[in-house]
Image (tube, rainbow, N blue to C red; front, side, top):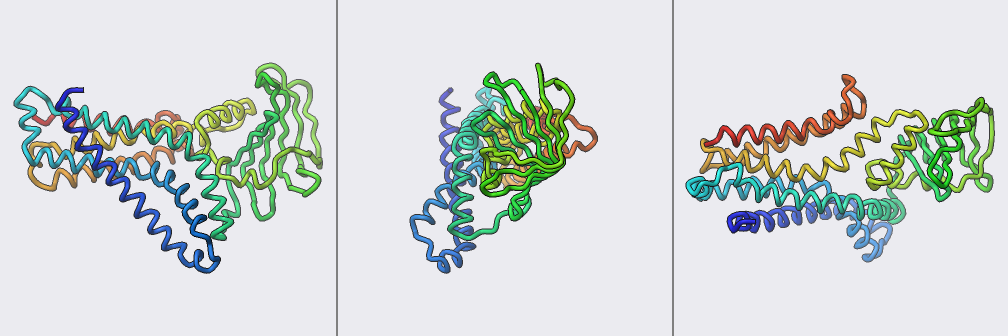
Length: 360
């Protein structure tokens, strides 16, 4: 890295850390005021409150990092532009595109940090955070959850389209069993499954399929009206955040998608979440690049218009990402998952390159 790159990166990194710290602090402070009544009413110990917010911070970090980097990148780029430092770079033969390298580098570092936190720290922290929220703060959990999945220690995957927490009942249940080589051996599908303490899961209106090589059916299905299975999973396991695809680790979600495909199930929503685990950290790179591109236009230098334009582009980019993921999950216009998820990022990068290419 050149001296000039280090000079810019040293200005951007502290501002990003400062903005991120402000976002985390304000999020915790707002949440604390919202729960202040519960803390006083239930006499929640200070140590429990500290643990709650300690595990709340990784969630805020993953969500707030791109926005903090957007503000930091726009502020630093506008300041460099206002002090004519980009003009000096241009006079020395450094183009604006080359000057964006330290911004992209800092964005890449932030993306790496966000991916590691979301894949390693967040699943466990989210589970503890949700447990403390329900037990200590007496928070109400969602009565009905959609698309939950659990993998047990016997290499079985359990998937349900809906889970009623109060009734302890699953709807649209599919259970896939594997051998030690991860080859499917049998699948069980049922209209509903009800948890009966001391007995297990009571399945209604289903069938059992024996599977052979590559998941092909072997023999005729065995239908049943009612049957009780003593599986080592409980309703509490389905209610944990780790059962939701957005809270799973990348490897776990990819394995689950592979196994659900073996059942012949539609995995669009899970594929979008898997792709989002890569694209969400990469948003840090894109927003930093957009912030630089918007703040360094010649006709906008020396005022706040470039800063406002960068923030506007960043917000439009956020909206495009959310729209693309929603279209991918719902299959609107039969759009392939990869196109729906990656298109907003590609368009944002193309726009930034186009703006810098036109700026002289």
